[in-house]
Amino acid sequence: MSQDSAAVPDAARKLAARRRREIVAVLLFSGGPIFESSIPLSVFGIDRQDAGVPRYRLLVCAGEDAPLRTTGGLELSAPYGLEAISRAGTVVVPAWRSITQAPPPAALDALRRAHEEGARIVGLCTGAFVLAAAGLLDGRPATTHWMYAPTLAKRYPSVHVDPRELFVDDGDVLTSAGTAAGIDLCLHIVRTDHGADAANALARRLVVPPRRTASDMGHQRYLDRSLPEEIGADPLAEVVAWALEHLHEQFDVETLAARAYMSRRTFDRRFRSLTGSAPLQWLITQRVLQAQRLLETSDYSVDEVAGRCGFRSPVALRGHFRRQLGASPAAYRAAYRARRPQNGGSEPALRPERAERPERERAALGAGSGERYSAAALAGHGLATAEAAEAGKPQSDAYASRLPESPVGRGAGRPVLPGQRERPVG
Image (tube, rainbow, N blue to C red; front, side):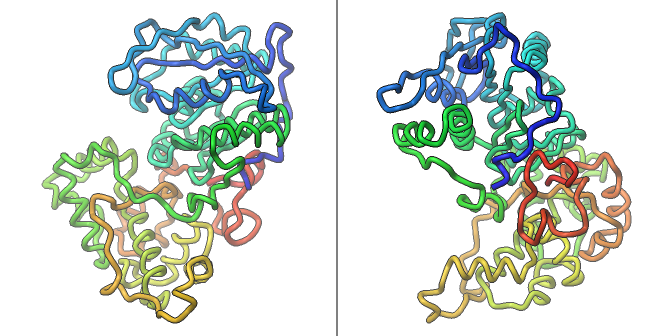
């Protein structure tokens, strides 16, 4: 349960006298999604003392000039501006409108000031990009929506991005993964401030589980298979579909660029702009995801799975599989079958020709596809030497550029605790 950090930063800042922890400022921007924005408003803005939930005082602050337009064209009018943040001991950024845009400098200055004066700073989902832009995540573990994790790691290489966590508590700076994980983090804040009874009472009122973990959602061990919506109407969609249909073959990114009638450089740039991931990362992740499906739905040996996923050797499969999912292929299969018994063991595991294939538009974009790859490892799954040279560069999209060759965490399949900075995260 690495979302409950066991470590608090050594240089914990003392809360300024005018700030109080129970005063929560929620920073809203135009273009932010209404669901994420409503989470802290509901958790901290409604008086539920009759249910045993201590009361917070909510300050809804506009992070930029009005009007603030949100999902569906709704216009919001915040009662406070950035000046109100100076009174808050907790500042929440529920979302940011676009990962390609820079947040307003005035809002970043207000966040830095609040942090310097000891306030607790919280970023929900893409709100992590605002915290990172303010420099508050430098050298810290953090998480965000899995789809944007590669972009966050590439843009802010000093941030230790771990997309497998529902939320990460690093003491005075906290971040959560996508959408509903914001509820988990807000409940965690209530639990930290007022104890488990208060958090459980709030969870009952919200009709949500009081305490979820990444493994409860399959989030830690199963990478999501969605692609950004933008790619659906893009010419690259056909190339992506072809790649997914031919994962059993050994091809490289040069092959994909040729199919798109683009130079390698143009293809890389276009692919990154659509997915936030390098083509090489994406391709490796697809092969790992295909291996997951075969391990779950077939009785092929690990060696056979490696060949059917385009890896040149089972050693390459094991290395990438363990780095992305924290367990060996054999251990993953055993754990999966233990959770999903085949009708009491009477029905054998399905071979691929009997298993239902997922729709191509639901093909995976890897959440955990960011490790730095060696030339030897890349050669193991059929990618060209040029790919290996590029992948070894420090500026690759590697949110696990700090990954060891050994399994993640203290043991196979055990995640690293946020806050344990002496150990790699991701």
